[in-house]
Length: 100
Image (cartoon, rainbow, N blue to C red):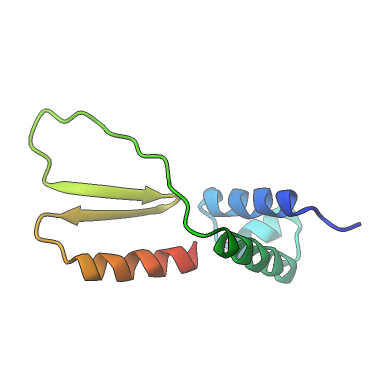
């Protein structure tokens, strides 16, 4: 029986949110690691076909002036301070996007 795309997406997202390595997560779930890699590739290709997506943004009220912006995605966190390099941030986000 073939697994539906929605099921693959759910499992890949569960793995990524777990904080574990994909290999450790697969071992804990008794899932063949190569099968998981195939799912992750399928999910990535599907997302690339859909194009860019907007993320939810949470704005917090600060009592003092803000000197940095923090971007959080799953287990990733990127802090951007004043005087940052937009081109470097673009490169970092592209790398994170390929890994996530």
